[in-house]
Image 1 (cartoon, helix red, strand yellow):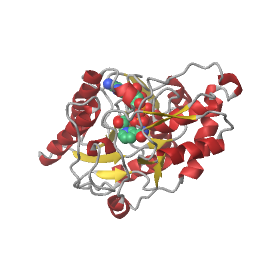
Image 2: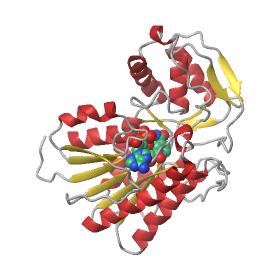
Image 3: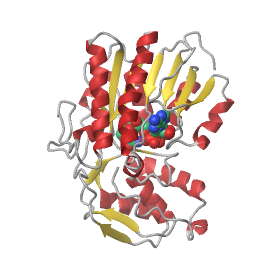
Amino acid sequence: MHRDDAMTILVAGGAGFVGSHLCETLLQQGHRVICLDSFLTGREENVLPLCGFRDFRLLRHDVAQPVVLSERLDRVYNLASPASPPHYQADPIHTMMTNVNGTLRMLELAERDGARMLQTSTSEVYGDPEVHPQQEDYVGHVNCTGSRACYDEGKRAAEALCYDFVRAGRADVRVARIFNTYGPRMRPDDGRIVSNMIVQALRGQPMTVYGDGSQTRSFCFVSDLVAGLIALMEAGRAPATPVNLGNPEEFEIRELAQMVRAMVPTTSPLVFGPLPEDDPKRRRPDIARARELLGWQPTVTLSEGLPQTVAWFTAEIGGAAGLATGTTDEGRSRADA
Ligand SMILES: NC(=O)c1ccc[n+]([C@@H]2O[C@H](COP(=O)([O-])OP(=O)(O)OC[C@H]3O[C@@H](n4cnc5c(N)ncnc54)[C@H](O)[C@@H]3O)[C@@H](O)[C@H]2O)c1
């Protein structure tokens, strides 16, 4: 599809779970998309189908390094960062630098071209929150020396950079604080709670619940998140502050486990392990600001999105029968990301 007002859009981190869905949607809308990705956690399978689009270009590059682009950009989405604890803790210094230097590089590109920039921040900037649900005005409860700090503090520093660029009049920047998102194209080994549970159930392995499973999360289906990111980017005026994007339906982790067990024929028992360090006890977005400023709210419930995700993982990792001997990512996957 071609359109007269087609834009040239850079998606840093476009080969990842969320980024590949975003690239796909933008291409379907008729835009030219440049996907910049180092493939640290992204996968070629995610973007191979997009290579069939004439207006798609793939650039293998580390976002933290200087980049030369000849195209004039209209939009810059920065999603480049490992997002699950096992991945962002594997090389914490690189995670911090990806978020700080990488965001700076993307801001500089946006400034060069007068492009709009959208930074993907995270609910992790609220840390283990003392207020519930979390509103954007809450400044957070983050341990700056803990093992999650490379990500939480990296994202917080990235937000600071964004608003310094805004205050200096150097770029039009929008910041999305994303809450737990799930759906097809999550990596089976990425250690996030939804993928962990589904993969363990499909493989007939014990399903790990950390703590007593009473901690809560709110799960947003990926198509809803992508719609929210685009709505934020295309809002006529940049909101003066970050905007939470997530699904406010809140579930205990043990409820999630029961839902997965109801969808996957499995004999997997639930096993309980210690809570990871600095693991948030409760998490639910207040999305009043997104509703008011963007007219956005999620439309896919967990009971609708989970079966689609289970179906995708079943195809991806070969179905239950082929998985009994599959390798386990237990031990690495210790977090309710
Ligand atoms: N999915 C969620 O629940 C969630 C929640 C909060 C925030 N976010 C944020 O949204 C963004 C996308 O998350 P995701 O779930 O798709 O994760 P993901 O790991 O699937 O995608 C991240 C992408 O960034 C790329 N990347 C990482 N470091 C890079 C670097 N130095 N240079 C270039 N590319 C690099 C990876 O290869 C990958 O393709 C991330 O910034 C993440 O922090 C996601």
